[in-house]
Length: 479
Length: 81
Ligand SMILES: Cc1cc2nc3c(=O)[nH]c(=O)nc-3n(C[C@H](O)[C@H](O)[C@H](O)COP(=O)(O)OP(=O)(O)OC[C@H]3O[C@@H](n4cnc5c(N)ncnc54)[C@H](O)[C@@H]3O)c2cc1C
Image (cartoon, rainbow over all chains, first blue to last red; front, side, top):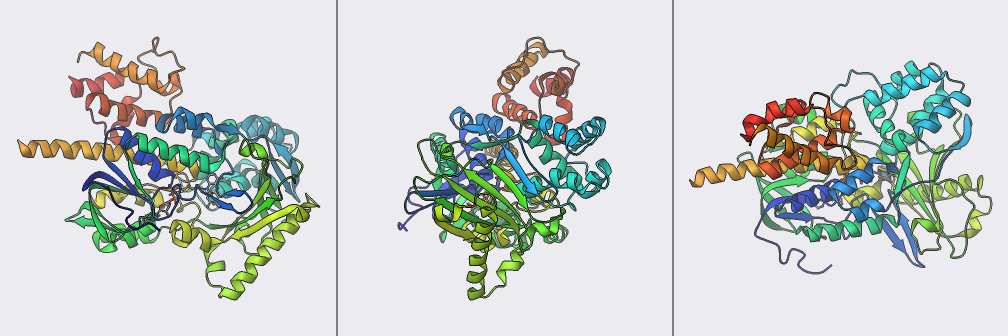
């Protein structure tokens, strides 16, 4: 690690962004573009947060969270980043399901799902249309207490197979369960259904690299290996941060670190009102993940298996079983050479939702044993579809909740931030401490690549407004 | 700014936000959301542009005032006078 990462920074910033996840980067980019003086501080050696990748010898490269996002990413990237980034977003070809209840491939959009629900699941067209329309009409500000499970049961009574079709991909896309508010399901499901699932051609490394260039073009200072220990607060107002042991002044601070970490570790509970803390302490984190990364030997390939393949051996759908350490459901993301034009490599990443507690408590030896079992079970599961895959594999390794927590400092390795109640706590932070915001995965709907980018935009608007107002106050004081 | 100038200012912003829509023939009393297919992120962009270009602040509680061209003009005229 080079000696002074903070060399050359300015003595004061309009905004310091703690963390370079997609929310932090997007917020920084917009404020930089508006002419604000912005500094991004990232503790890791790479930008992107969970939008990340890693390389292994013999040319392997694995994406962690490039499985799919809604079409809305095109507009958000165009507007808040640039045309080049937006132009590399492309639809995936197909999504497959295989479980004891059904097995088929779909383009995962409203048209194809309508056909499937009517033809395969024998649902009347009016019922299907009514379901889609209701799902699309949910607003984040009117939670009437209905859960996703209740909503699905109301729309398709007694049809666990239909509930699985509608819910399983969403459970993977944002860690939500049948007990979470129906509006979180409705919003995210409808985002996907509008046009299907998209990915970034060229890989996460290319996207984050292009984002870094754009940030620098917009005058944003970006530092890696820069760990923020503390947000400085004086008389209820933010004054800067302490990073790598050094104080840096700022008129405002945006924390892209996870919500609970921001309140408890970075700011300190003593700076918040007790009724706020009471709410904040009740915020539940989202589940975590396990992944198994499998790279094929150069020259080896496998037949088209869909881009995203939702598999399960469980005979019915159950949110709790999705996270269980005794894995029954896996999503395989298949990467063909065209994922990174110019490459000839095939790879597969298997993802499962997971509970922090199942893994955190394991003594080291048992942890290693469990990790080896996870890898072996995953290969066996894959052999059902690709019988000769074992002999073709060149690189295989696994990540568990502890891995995600280590690299992104996320409390309990939460993959998608918090449950729904986290959103109102996140939004209330600036009312507690002037000049401080949180931007990052929160509240289920503000998670995933698109959700966090859009939350970064929302926060940038508030920060810009705050800075304009405080400029006006400064000007009056000077007069 | 006159009401007519403010109307043009809003149209310029909308044309940037929804480049594929016909902003010239906007009906003043029909919801912008329906006419131009705007979503909540688009309205946020309108608010950010108003601040950037005209130094006008629209707090989030006032976003509903931007529903139609007429309501925009009623709301913004005193602020942009
Ligand atoms: C396994 C997995 C698969 C996923 N798949 C998908 C998918 O297919 N599609 C999709 O849309 N989304 C997916 N997601 C979710 C998506 O990646 C996240 O929701 C999103 O990237 C989170 O962005 P964020 O802005 O909240 O910040 P994060 O990514 O959480 O980044 C926060 C950053 O802050 C830094 N940081 C924290 N504390 C400090 C500190 N004190 N000082 C300095 N830096 C700090 C961290 O190092 C990190 O870089 C997946 C996530 C995981 C884990």
